[in-house]
Length: 271
Image 1 (tube, rainbow, N blue to C red):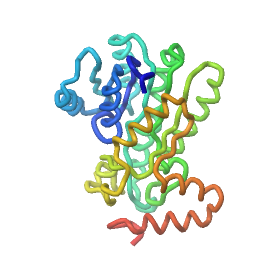
Image 2 (image 1 turned 180 degrees about the vertical axis):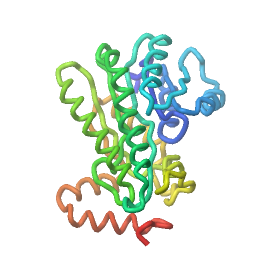
Image 3 (image 1 turned 120 degrees about the vertical axis):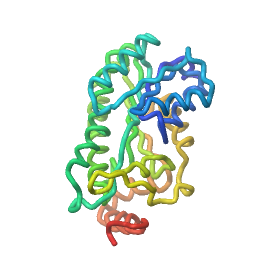
Image 4 (image 1 turned 180 degrees about the horizontal axis):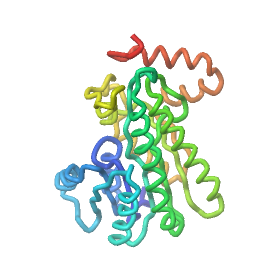
């Protein structure tokens, strides 16, 4: 992890969950950290709580679904630090509802944040990442490898993110750019509490036992280590790895296993 020292890293969705844990871990590893999130006041609270040296970080209010915000994020990073070594596209939202009951605006919102947010941020940071032969990472999900029922919009947005990053990696085989897709399994984070219901309202409480999941802190350490090792794909949790393998060799069985697993959630839409 010594290789991260003094590297400039942009983290979107840095006010909670995996993004917040990534910011804390990056600061612990003496990186120069750019924390981006819609609610800048939460970033200010985080920085104050840890008494970080203001020379080593900046806070940028950013709605990644707005291209102009993503351009400003890059501009402010360059104005402060003069370079970009790592971009982690972490900002994201989820949903839980059957497609038959779903307002299509929910899927549009997920695509705007999860997919277009990645595209916008990567587009504006790319010239600087190419210059530094740096790394761009997308925090995706097992749902970006295996479609999950009642998460049609979420799965679609993560599949789109992964297709974009895979193509970008291939385009840059000879430029020195590193591209990694990180696919955590179920993680103890804020994303399920802010997930959208069928009408676009916030779900509120998580339908899962957060205590039984991998922590956001552990996920953040895996992601940063993956960037150091310049991995192309990072699949986390034993359940997540098993799902990926089974989906390749026994897709029909996986359909049934995934359905049954998701149907066991409290207040499952399948009941």
